[in-house]
Structures are given as structure tokens and as C-alpha cells.
Amino acid sequence: MAYGEEVVAGYETCPTWAPILGFLAAGLCSTLANFGAAWGTWKSGLGLCSMGVNHPRGIVKNLVAIIMAGVLGIYGLIVSIIIAGGVTNPDNGANTYSQYTGWAHVCAGLCCGLSCLAAGGTIGLIGEMGVMATGFRAEINHAKGNRPLPGQVGGGGADDGDEMGGGGGGGGGGAADESSGADENKLFVGMLIMLIFSEALALYGLIVALIVSQSQYKCGE
Image (cartoon, rainbow, N blue to C red; front, side, top):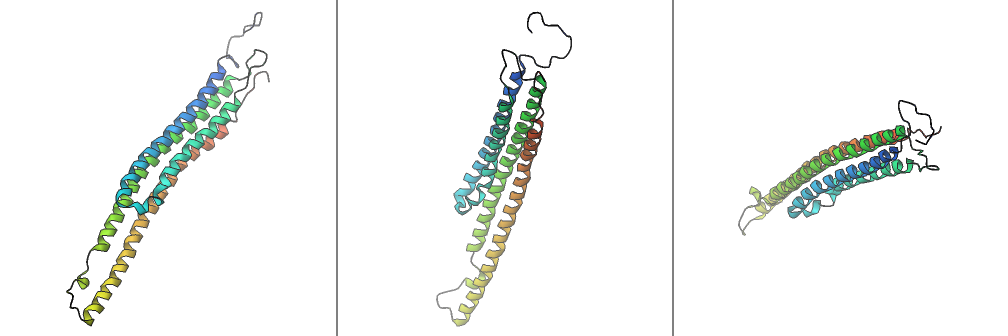
């Protein structure tokens, strides 16, 4: 407050400390979103490494959880850039960033950051257990496929009839492999749907944060 300015009791619209709110909001948004992304990547990566020991063919397909966790950091980055860009510079020593805008930015930053944090934890837990379950299902299918069928057990002196029986057993094994593969795909699809709805939590927070961050009041208007 300058010397000689009239003192008015009540709410101060543009205090000198108001820019702290904007910078704090930008920092919290990016930090919380990155924490959620790191959490989801950490848990999903542990599950992927555990599954890849015995089922390396499924590593690429099950990278989806890690990719979705990494996107959370991008959400926080977008909102943080918007908030930081809304913090105006002082004009001739007078603050131009209002307290109203500061609290709106705090709300937007926490909305996006905490939503990404919750989504990251959910993606991490679902990704870890879902990937490991998919690997276990593949191991069971592999064990069933290598199990000898009764028609395939016999000595070296098998006649033509035994060879025909063996061929029939091979056909049954092929049908069993197709059924086992379908079970594995159903488990993967279920995990994928849960991951999509978990990612939607962060998307909801991003949309609300973008809307709230547009609520601004410039000092002097």
C-alpha cells in the first residue's frame, strides 16, 4: 500500500503475496502428477519384470500399463504451463495478479495433480496384478499344451491305427490351445478395460482444471 492511499477495511483484491498462489499451484500440479506417473510406472514395471521371466512373449503387449502411467505426467505438465503463463508480471511496482486468480489456479492445480496421483496408484496396482495374472495364465496354458495326451502315449512299434489315434489327439490338443489362448486374451481385455477407466480419473481432473484455470480477474479492471 502506497503512502497517502486511502485505507479501506475488507477484502484485499490484489495483495503483494498473490503470485505465490500461482507459482505454488503450478509446482504442486506438476509434482503430484509426476508422483502419480512414477507410482504407476513403478508398480506396473515390477509386475512386467516378474511376468517376463517365464513369459517373455507377453512383454510388449503388457507395456500398456506403463504407457498409460507415463501419460499422467503430461497432464500435469499441460496444466502447470497454463497456470504459470497466467501469473502476470508487476506493472510499475504494482501487483497485477489478483488473489481471485491465484485461488482459481490453486484449485486447478490441485484438481489435476491429485486426480493424476489417484489414477497413478490405481494404474500401478491394476497393472502389477493384471500383468502377473496374465503371465500366470500363459504359464498354465503352456503347461497344459505340453502335457501328453492318452492317445499320444505309446511305444515305437505303433501300427497305422495307433498313428491315426495319435493324429486325433493332436487335433484335440490344437483345440485346447485355442481355448487356452482365448482365456488369456479375455484376462488381458479385462485388465485393459480397468486401466482405461483408471486413466479416465486423471482425464476428468484435467478437464475441470482447464476450465477452472480460465477464471481470472486482473487488477485494475
